[in-house]
Length: 254
Ligand SMILES: Nc1ncnc2c1ncn2[C@@H]1O[C@H](COP(=O)(O)OP(=O)(O)OP(=O)(O)O)[C@@H](O)[C@H]1O
Ligand SMILES: [Mg+2]
Image (cartoon, rainbow, N blue to C red; front, top):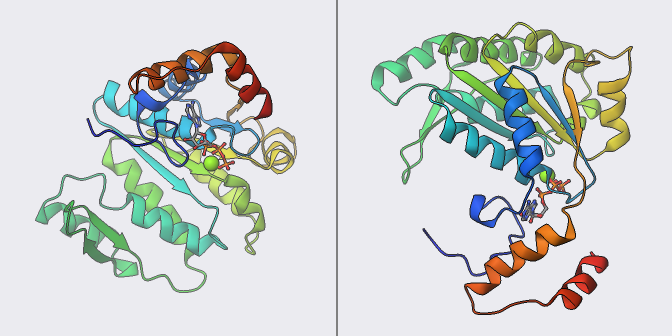
């Protein structure tokens, strides 16, 4: 295993070793997704939503065969087309084993949008981008969902910063996505966001498309005692330790 300089991870997810607690939430998310329930994760900034999604996805892929997890962060997308383009690059081609015939199949499946293929020099992983004309977002989104459906694989798709879709200029993106997800027997979703009121409005208002479409979860702070033992486990490898009083002080400042 590669060691990292700072075991207290500031960005991204570096593996279960550096991930503290969240046992109950991990279990709840894994069980719900396995039982074909979509999840909505709502919690304030920096509470650990993104980390938890990666953690759950890593466990799911480890535990079950033929499961494929996709993580999309749509924070930087400004409209439906950009979201579709992001989905295309993350998802298309990743459900097939890399072979000439599989790549040809993908090319044919998305032929209306002349997919361009780039291959990562280091990993050999193919990435597709689509040639989308204005107003083709809806059709191509549908095609991406069809692609996941026909793969026969069990797919989990996380859309992080999901409230961003409310800022898209196109009308009815919420209803559009909602209408697709209910007809995909092998694809389940995690919608995550930190804008509490926007997320709650979308998922808890009876007049909105996503009403009662998923299990809504929030994330509490990690308990002090759990984090103390986690910190000391990591520090012990550097032959260091933090005492309870010092830790209580640091914890109360956070
Ligand atoms: N369970 C955990 N154990 C250890 N570190 C964690 C844990 N959860 C989150 N972190 C760390 O805390 C920081 C914030 O977590 P994360 O990015 O997951 O939060 P977030 O809720 O997605 O925040 P934002 O709303 O800003 O996207 C990250 O550096 C992450 O590595
Ligand atoms: Mg996040």
